[in-house]
Image 1 (cartoon, rainbow, N blue to C red):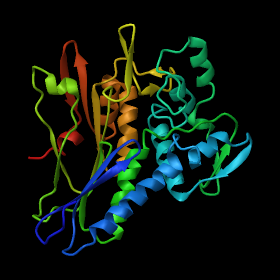
Image 2: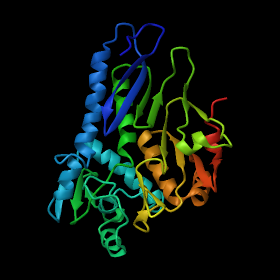
Image 3: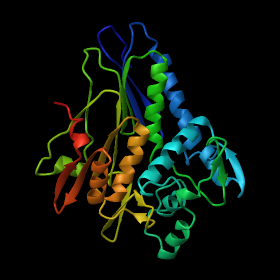
Image 4: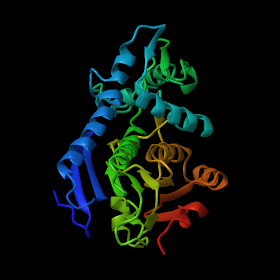
Length: 324
């Protein structure tokens, strides 16, 4: 753990959500970095306690077990994440869906311990019948959620992004003027470094991109109060009979996205929104996803397979974010 000085940045790090977090921050001389570290960890532990399906006593797990017809009280943070998830689900035409828990478990990507394998078609259709974001019913300003029976939320496509957001909020509240927060690859940055420059972030690449003989140019983003998230077939995938199955599921088919992009990166104001939109655009695919992002002013970059090579596409809004 580096000590803060008047002219240098401090670095903190730890573990959360099955991955690592790191923070670079501009702290005043004499700042208590141990207290900041503990506050960051508590903020992330709160996200786990509310939204992790891997924790039996989490709020999301209790909702899964709730009696049909019962209304479940949601913590404020959980409700805020669900607000964003529903907004992206509606805007994307359901390409993002926070109710895919049964399908995530069926394909072996969830906490149920199901082996990763291709399920029977009848099983897919049965579990699809238990999903659908339009089944979500809330009251009391969104703070109470109905369990109609069998509904299983899965916020893995947005929770790490929210974790980055809540850490940034915590640091602002503690008087930290600038920070670069990263949680499992999702990034939230605000303020400027002590030298007055914005935070520069290398866009996350894929192993294929690293090894691509064409050598796609490295892309560096300049962030000043913005967030970055990346989705793609690099994370949590398996192969069966020569076919690769990515962990990103298409709510319309109940199956992993066919021909998923190697990576989709989104820049937005908040990391949870960037996280959700990276998933939604991955589901849409490079053609439809890029056209949608361009039309709606989303800053998005696609890296897709083109035979044995990789092809890069980006929206005007993403290009405008690139460092000069």
